Image (tube, rainbow, N blue to C red; front, side, top):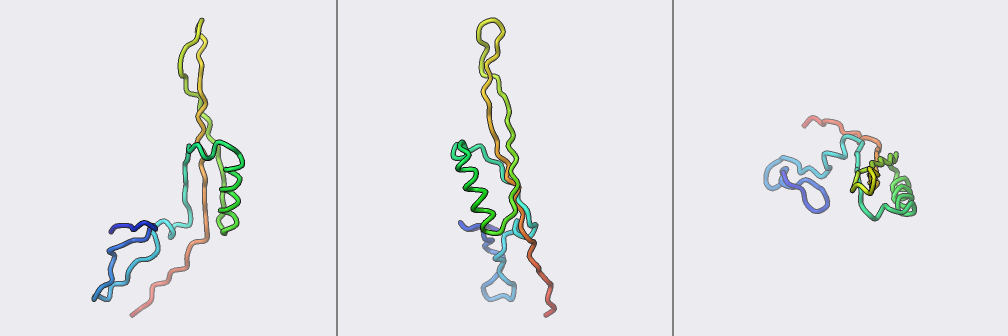
Length: 105
């Protein structure tokens, strides 16, 4: 099974057979997603707040965790280690699970 540009499954069925085509991505059935990003777009708090606002306005529940890590870049002078800080944003997004029932044919 392949996915098209919108994340929908392709090739799951259809055509002349009675097999239904799957239009719901598999991730949608779980009701949760974990998104990790270290993109430069989220360097400012304004961009992070905008992402949180858009997701919550669209009905998602979002929890943000900021993971900061110090990575030594070089040693300066008498054993002074100069470190750079990297930031990874972890968005925990959840939504109500769909109510899917098996129908007898």
